[in-house]
Image (cartoon, rainbow, N blue to C red):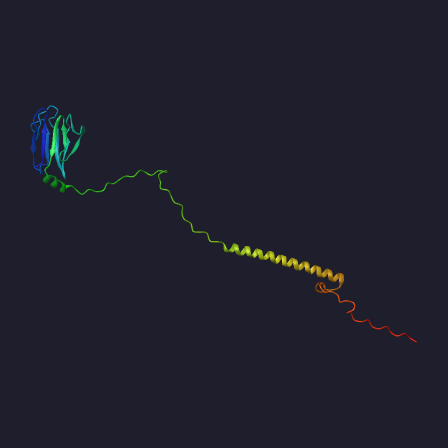
Length: 209
């Protein structure tokens, strides 16, 4: 059975026991309470010890001096084994046996993971957007072909210009010499034969008698 010990200043401690099936235990200075406390700092109806799932809690019911845990006034105080609470100036000690703690522990619902609220997103806190990956550009093969075609056009232009220049020279040479420029260019490198190797001249005709 849970044990509650009430200690009024300058008086002997007074223990109380009750069954786990007891739902409410009233405490106060009035004689109608389940635990009557003879102390001026305790209100007529001071507090209630209420049975909850997995244990008990102490609730203030509008007292003047309130209930305190470690010097801090509270409206509700969960009662754990070995807890010491103050009702006004009166000490309230709560104890459970090992069997009672095991029985109450089986009543507690499984602990669920907490839901954490994240801070609202602002302009500075928005996740950084990564740049989209674009496919690598295709090399313009058309440009390469155009570039090669342009080079061929330049070479063709020089060939045509050279042909036109040579044709002009051939026409001019033909007008001036009456011969072919190609023949002249072919004979230009040949050396004329020596005089002695030339054919003998025809003998002179005999004089008339």
